[in-house]
Image 1 (cartoon, rainbow, N blue to C red):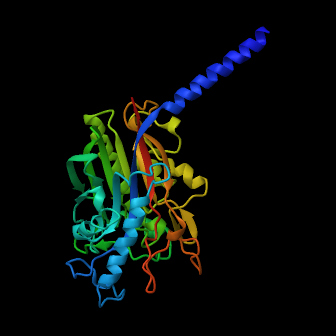
Image 2: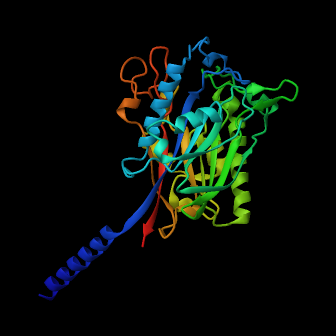
Length: 369
């Protein structure tokens, strides 16, 4: 009898614990990154945008531009809706953006206009004029500072790699421009935005690392430099606040397993491996489980990643913490026929798609007392 009573007691205790867990309530925010792939307007600018004009090779008309905006807005409005159905992302990092004007057009789309997104954007030295930017919901996030930090890379960084490796040039329209006088390779800046998310300070970095033009191994030193720059920025923030909440995101043109991420940033695959000042990368585990945000040389990979500092993975939800990550790849965003079946549905001469990347996202949650 005593054993039966003891078992019954434990059942009651378990039921109470389960009930208490179920009654907990959380505030949730989605943080996302999306490569908008050639978000150009139809106006001839000072950048190399001739391809994306009405009389250019893409025959980029106003109607096509408007359809592209509509498609992107639809996706953005739905990212993270599985677990956060009542709101679109609070923070959205983006890349392959021609200028601030296209972002102003984007946030005025019917699917987004009621969210009242603010914009942080700088023109980068990239000759095609494809920049990075951060969109944020003004009612939830209040920027206090923002700046663009240049990535200084030079052609002589890859001279030895070029001698050692004989690679075919990767097919890509994301070519790096080289200053023949300085040998500098012009690429995108890193965008750093600091602000308050519902009163809590958060630092957000948005990246678009140098492409694999010229070959993966030959161009790797550029991305390794980008990883080290990310680490330097983080360390400078940690000197001011050892418990800083940092989110770094972007199209890295490298996988989570590459040297640029593993050594440059020092990102870890598992939470328990992350020490103070460390960085957790949930997309590394997702990659090894077979997920992909794009297809590179006919193989799926995750070049689009969001990583968080140690302060965001502690098991105390009295302030905002990382919960989980995902890749948003609904059927309407996927090519259904032909050679590229299963790939992201991108723009072609006959169809205005979305992007050659799927967006990625994480959730930040805080317990409501």
